[in-house]
Length: 304
Image 1: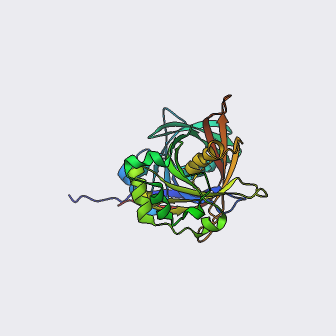
Image 2: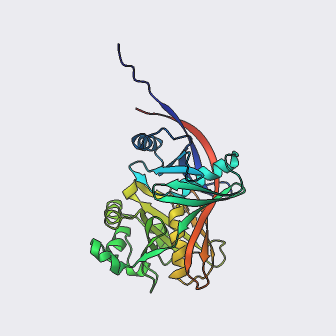
Image 3: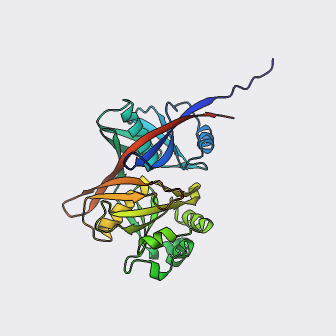
């Protein structure tokens, strides 16, 4: 008797997370009812979808839902825009209601807050590593600047970049003005090599917004180690940036609005809201980052 190979088809939804005024945002793949999928199958699906991240939503005995995240080339512990895409879509379609739920990840549980059709995800208190701390991994501040094509004149005086972790690690890089931010031509292989040495998702390069703006900062994210040359909204980087603004730059506000995606080609304006939890001593004890999402389309993926 001949063995017949039956191809499995999986339906994925493409949902833009962190949309701004209903447009833009960062597209993520979202696969529901993924309980029976193996890691290898999830990776294959993420590769075929071809977006920066895909969220796989399964049932969980320990949290409201289990979420697995994959880029086109590897698993990632957390993904902000894919989390917001998944939960905001579930709120819109009635799978979750107003209030608090949670996600279980390979890195443990995280709280999720649903407000209307918006979703917000918990991140951890920040941990910082200055450029002096990078030397043990063979990375210097000049290496980071060179990988972005930046000179001393492009940087903010007295505010060196730092590695910040609120669940994932990013190097937060402040630059002097929007012209510098727009003009960055990243050396992707160098960024990938540095990211491997320091176990980063990537770089989050930002400029402070003018006082007339509704946002606090505008940023760009480069993550080639995870097959993300640049993406238009990165919730897991906006959290570290908000902490950097509060702790390092002295912007003592518990709510921060971060813009992203404006300098991509094509532009995809995105809005990320971050709320910091501040204790009586003024220390950040945790945070939530979130926003809105918009469901765009469905696609079918055939497993080999």
